[in-house]
Structure formats: structure tokens, C-alpha cells
Image (cartoon, rainbow, N blue to C red; front, side):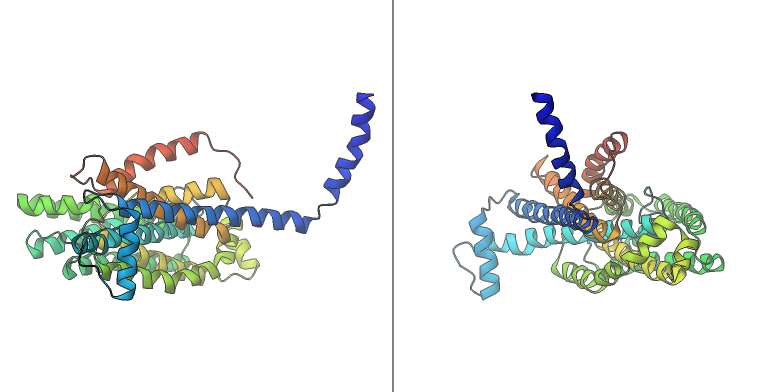
Length: 369
């Protein structure tokens, strides 16, 4: 009787499976991926709240809410004015810069990995970070050892050097129609060049300036100020919609290659030029504010790809969430481990990111498609 029952039930199961149309399957897949993206955003919000609460001042959720409400309404309570100042002037900008910087670096990494069709490249592939390090090091020498990330000269030096590097790469690669292999090779060459120039500056400077340069290259959101947060926020609000709009073309280039993408009507050279410039700007501005933070642009997109798949319509926002989460968690842990001392976020980010990256690569499972 059991065999008869099982046999009788099989047709009904097959009928139910056959009744699911391809459109419904696609809709379910899109709903699942949208839920994953939403979960990533929620995780970033939770981590940000924890990051604001972490510290030696002993702030609670009520204090944070009271501070935010007071700033919105313009009514600051005199009872907890010192604590509210710490929350609003130190912790909120710090966590906000970590979130926005993580988003910018992860989006830039996703763009580079898609355009160059290589999941192991990062915003540093084109030499942007080494160029920014050289510009910042030169600025520190001019400033006489000042490492304040809010200093205009330091920010300008890092940003200018990174953008000059990008212009050189694009100008040289334009002779090959911005071929992916040419971009990578040029980036490697310029990376070595700017690393050598930075090492030369360090070799000929005194101990105080050398220490300042080294501290900047560690990467940190300590000392974040509101103008940095506002600048990055404006850039992301302006640039991310265009990048999301180009995800269809990015999919064609990443999955089919340049020739096939052109046959589909994608202006490959134009798209690659626009997206590389956007990724370079996001990377350069973030590095100018935070110093060298190397692992987010590599690990964030790769983790996101293993979880949600390679469709850039979902990969881009989820990579942004993963990048923000990595940077906020790294900064929070850096403040907790050796409190009251603060470990630079770049060090914590590499310590956390490297094992996760190795584990995911060695145990990678088929991603959602």
C-alpha cells in the first residue's frame, strides 16, 4: 500500500512543479535576491547603531535617540550636553564615514571586477590607491608631519594624484580601446611606480614625517568630520543611480565579453570609460578621507557575488551593503579590542577580511543565478 500511495502522489507533485511558469520562477528568484539585499541593509543599520554605542563614554540607545532628536529639533538638553557632543561630533560622523566609505570602495570594486572580468581585482588594480598614497605623503611632507585627515592639503594631494593616475591609465589604454588586459597591465606598472615614489619620500624624510606617513597608510576613520560625510554622501547620491542604470551593460561586458557586448548594442568603450572614472573618483575621495583601506574593495564584492550571484542589478547594492558592514564592524572592533587605544580600521579590516575571503574561496558553493 505504501508503494501505491507513493506512486499515486508523484504525478500530483510533477503537476505542481509543471504549473510553476518560468515567469514565476524568475519572480521568486528576484524576490529572494531583493530580500537578501534588504537583509544586508538591515545588518548595516544594526551594526551602525552598535558602532555609535561603542566607546568609553557609556552611551545608551536612549542617549543616541535623544541626541538625534535634539539635533533635528534644535533643542539640546543641557543635562547630557557633553555626551551628546561626543555622540554627534565624534561617533556619528565616524560611523557615517565608515558606512559611506565602505559603500564607495565596494561599489568601485564591483565596477572594476565586472569591467575587467576578474573577481580578484580591486580599486587598487589601476594604481589608484598607491597614487593617492604618494599624493598624501607629499602633502604630509609639505605640512610638516600633519596627519589630520581634515586638512585640505592632504585631501587635495591624495585626490589629485589618484585622478592624475587614472587619467594616465585611460589615456594610454585608449589606443587599445580600453582593453581590459591593457588596463590591468598599465595599472600594475603605475602601482609599482607610485609605490617606489612613496618609498623614496619615506627614505629621505625625518622620523616625525615618516611616522605621520605610516599612520596615514594604515587607514582610519578616526577624526572623521561632517564635511567628509557630506561630500561622500553627495557623490554617492549623484553617481550611484547612473552606475545602477548601467548594470545591464555591465552584465553584458562581464558575462559575454567586449565583442559580444558590442554585438548586443552596448557601447563598450563609452561605458567602460564612464564607469572607470566614477570608480576612480569614489576610490580617490574615500582614500583621501580615510587613508589606505585595501581589503573592502576586493572582499566586499567577492563575498556578495558568492551569496547573491553575478547579476549586477543585485550585486551592486548588495556589495555596497557588505562593504559598509565590513568597515563599520572593523572600526567598532578596533575601538573595543584594546580600549581606550584605537586600532586603525585598515589593520582590522585586513585581519577580518583575509580569513573570510580564504574560507569563501576554499568552500565556495554555487552562487544564486
